[in-house]
Length: 446
Ligand code: FES
Ligand SMILES: [Fe+2]
Image 1 (cartoon, rainbow, N blue to C red):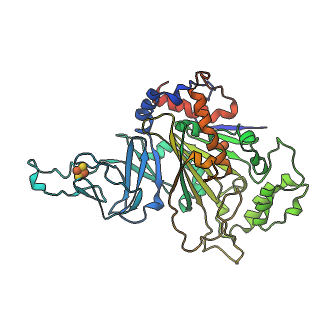
Image 2 (cartoon, rainbow, N blue to C red):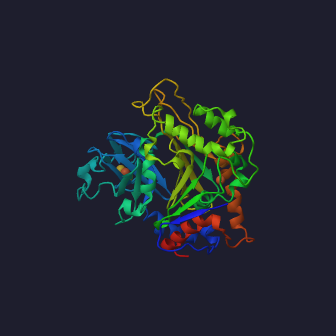
Image 3 (cartoon, protein in one colour):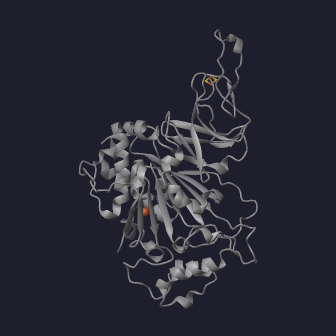
């Protein structure tokens, strides 16, 4: 078993563990609000939800709500979602298109640029209405790779400085060209960091996700540590976990992957460890004809699963054809709760490139599946919001793997609340957790 660690910072990461109060203490939560959420760039949503001027969505972030709109001039701008008359929440719809935003209380109306455009009975304000001053309060807004980021701070560092080097690794995946096919939010009874921690280590995978031994090699991964608390991970895919006996025949998942690429699984009986390489070569061979721009990837990227975590709360899990954005958001007041979003995006084939008619259209996730061209009339899915109890009851699913995580996390939080637990005890495989927490305490204090 080899974990390769590539440290892009100028200091080593030492495992030093930390107190459980970070997960349960309202005082720590309050400090997080000031030190993290109010001052850090946060992934708020997708540029694809803001195609035309007047398109908007609302980003719920703890006690705040940010309204993000495509302005009349075509730029993207975030505002606190608060009417400047007496502070009512302005927009109550989650997303949509508007010519203007009208407050339900006294009908003050703002245009999509946030300017105060209309005030009923304006002559009754003895001092007039200083419309410029009463425009919606903007927040810093920027865009990278098809994602909208906001920052509530006064004078934040530019977004690309904050991302410090991560885009160089992720830009070949062209996330901005992917299409949203599923959007879910589950309410969880755990602190938001319990979710980040969970998606920062592979130590639990053999035990909580036994199905993974049929598709990825969690023993030979590469970890990247970046400044500002960001981390990355590359896990070999289209293979099996060598910690377990290697099967003679391709696993069911490998079989699907091979067939999807037009390869015969029976050719690989007794050669299961050769499948990853075969997948890479085959994708190189047929990728362009199937409409995929694989030339910007190295061979490993064609078979492997990557997972990058942007500080504080954005987790990207992806292959060249698929992306999950996983994002826990803190509860407004309770450290024991959070909301957990999952966006699923796929890279459809570039129709300009496709030759022949054997494209396979399959919406789902497997590390080497090629999607084919986008089905006609595909609409942006509505967000589905549910409780973790619905996941446990089998009424909702976020895929087997994430369901397993979701089912577990309330138990972690319950344990954190117990007087029978004090501090974490981390191993080297949990280095990304430590790195994330080291940056957190720089901002928040210990
Ligand atoms: S609070 Fe919005 S118009 Fe009065
Ligand atoms: Fe997991």
